[in-house]
Amino acid sequence: MSAQSTTTGQSDSLISLPSNPVGYLVILAAVITGVLHLVLAPRAMGFNQMMGILFILNGLGFLGGVVLYLTPYWNQTLYLVAAAYAIATIVALFVFQGFSIEAFYMEGSLNPMAVITKVTEAIVAIGAVYLYANTS
Image (cartoon, rainbow, N blue to C red; front, side, top):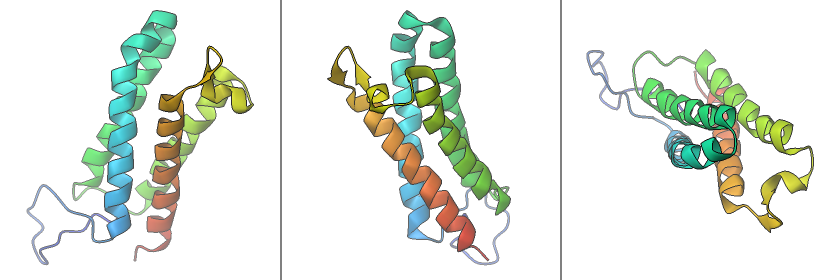
């Protein structure tokens, strides 16, 4: 997520677009998982209020990260923060659902939303590390 302005010499811009195509992939993945968590929050709230609140916070965290990334305030260290955040959300699934493949199942069936959110979070983590390593 190398958020550098596509117009050189213009520091007054409120939005800085990624200069690396991987940045766009990471943005897409973060938006997908953020929106999915917000959409699924009411359903999670029905099972457990704390889980619903965590879904809302996680969704807002990913979307807020995208907004921050698109501003001139983004810096190289934040790539590592983004990667750590994404990895923490992947680990959280296993903490709450158990440390096995069963974490991706709900009522005996594969939960596609769990798979999609964790794959997109892995894309965010891998992409952020890649961008950290490739940002000057």
